[in-house]
Image 1 (cartoon, rainbow, N blue to C red):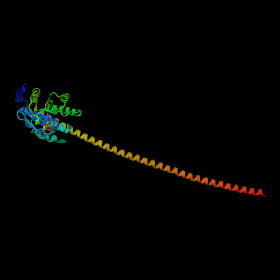
Image 2 (image 1 turned 30 degrees about the vertical axis):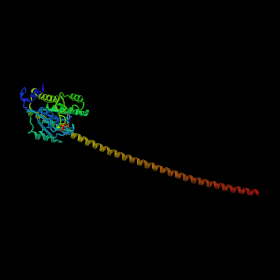
Image 3 (image 1 turned 30 degrees about the horizontal axis):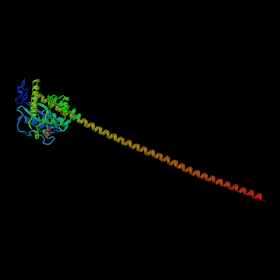
Image 4 (image 1 turned 60 degrees about the horizontal axis):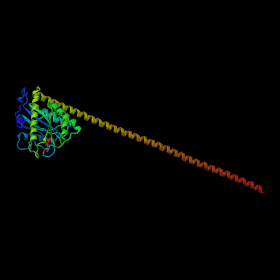
Length: 354
Ligand SMILES: Nc1nc2c(ncn2[C@@H]2O[C@H](COP(=O)(O)OP(=O)(O)OP(=O)(O)O)[C@@H](O)[C@H]2O)c(=O)[nH]1
Ligand SMILES: [Mg+2]
């Protein structure tokens, strides 16, 4: 399809023209999500730039430096029936951040500033938003991922889980947008996402402040992406009985359950950590007691050895004293005998002279 035809298909899209009518939907909400600084806002700029085909502007306030910036959920109206939503990116895939992503994706929070909360704060915010959020928005989840960032094996499982939960939550398999397409191994990243079950992947070099030289390739890719979004929404509405109010309710239940499970898990982990810490402390205390006992045993052994040595030395000293005395007495006896013998032999010699 040439570009003009594509534009006219996108521009004229309306749920009212779906076979079986709009089933309660009136606009497509393209919900962008993903990690911080992967190019969500730049992708919105790219879409608006291509759609308006005028001068480049930083409509979505993409970060001018390399990093993350968006703190608000800002809707950008592309056509009367298609809205792009720039969501706040998450820093990690941990349970708090994914909870917030699901609430954003499920359109359970009002558009505007995004606060992130711990504990059951998210549930409170969803309940407070009930009257503001629209059930008539058809959500198409779109994950934005930069080719620059290699997906390490531990991240792969988290990312896959996130994509599948996004599908369960919205009823639509997320489309993946790869940004910075010339800055990394595109083939590898594409095949990683295909392995995760993703059917539609678009790779872009986003139009940015530095590089917004219009190219046919980029323009066509953006229009094809929008056409794909429309086809998906149409397919879902035409091939399935829909009830937007009930679906919103189900999304809410899903996120409540997720938050509840998360809190329960956190509490359990906290208790396990506490138990492990107490166990470690008890073990350390026992070890200390054992060491003290061992030191006491050694002290006693040493004292006993010292006592035995002292006794042996005393016996030895006594033996030497006894021996010396005995030898002294012996010597005295011998001297006495010798003296006696000398005397006797003197008597005998005096008798002979006579
Ligand atoms: N070369 C190039 N730069 C890009 C591309 N996409 C985004 N950038 C740059 O990357 C930086 C971050 O892009 P953003 O669009 O602000 O990222 P983000 O996902 O909106 O960030 P958060 O709002 O924090 O989640 C900016 O400096 C962009 O100019 C791309 O495809 N190619
Ligand atoms: Mg942003």
